[in-house]
Image 1: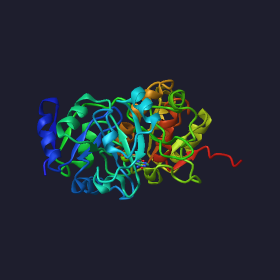
Image 2: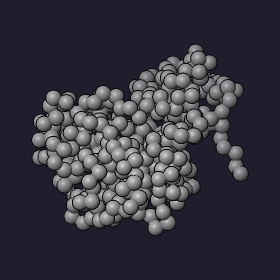
Image 3: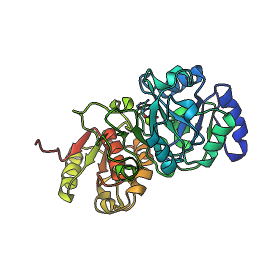
Image 4: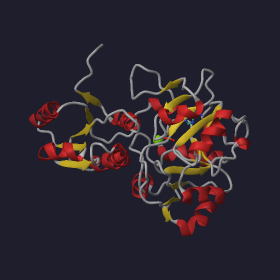
Amino acid sequence: METKIYDASTIDEAAELLKVGELIAFPTETVYGLGAIASNDEAVKNVYKVKGRPSDNPLIVHVSDRKIAQYVAFVPQQAEALMEAFWPGPLTLIFPMKEGVFAPTVTAGHNTVALRMPAQEQTLELIRKTGFPLVGPSANTSGKPSPTTAQHVLHDLSGKIAGILDGGETQIGLESTVLDLTNADGPVILRPGAITEVQLEPIIGKLAGSAQTTNEAEAPKAPGMKYQHYAPAQPVILIDGTAADWEGVIEEYRGKGKAIGILASEEQLAVHKAAARATYSLGLKDDVAAASQRLYAGLRYLDEQPIDVILAEAYDLSGLGKAFMNRLEKAASSKYPKKQAK
Ligand code: AMP
Ligand code: MG
């Protein structure tokens, strides 16, 4: 099939295709989602198939407003306040599931369901015109960096889906915060994102837990977090160190005759650019929002370059840095310098 590009003037046609079970990728403020009407089990199964997504990793359902009582078993009081504060926006909430509302495959056997209202006017319009919520996992091949442009979606899914609603580059560039409201001990962040603990706690009180950046010893919190993610073909070495550490890693790979790619801040590139075959700038070091917005495009760009290894710069964990580092750690095959054992 030919994958057609849609825009604001052709949303009606895209919605008609969704209604009959076709797949249409859509922009959000986080990354592009792969849309299918959440009531059609065949369509939802096809989402797993074209992404190559493991069948035990549930999908987020995208809604067009805050009136969600009809879709879940009940709406916890905290959810009302959170939706008021952060929807539309990059916060996914996990609710107790209501039988018979969504196609069975949406929740992958869980008794909970994840809902989000994206802050993207064209996509809200697409959902309204389709007349029912849409599933929307990231519109990439499973395991690869998430798509932040319609071109990224085409690269991975061209010929496999009916269309893409093109909304340009996504604003945030990292997937939503996932907050579980069904946990008996209190709310838990399953996946860090642009809405942080510091923003959530004034509204719902102390969280019962929060996913850290990747820690292999820890069991995955969200069902999907155990899988390899965001990874280009080359190994990604995460460097969390001094200028001397960078020199050391660069010398090591050059000594082995390896072509190096660097994904780093302007400041870091200014020092080490000469040693690299290819580089991608994450922006100025104090701007973690810019780094987050560029991360996946950078990994995708370097993936296509004639290089053997990607050296990537670590950022501070404060604010959005936690989500940025969570994704970069998942993309990385090793870290340098190695953490000292406690
Ligand atoms: P993606 O759609 O690729 O951005 O991933 C969606 C994330 O939300 C994955 O980490 C899922 O495991 C998580 N998720 C979706 N539904 C649920 C649910 N019912 N319970 C817990 N996590 C969920
Ligand atoms: Mg994904």
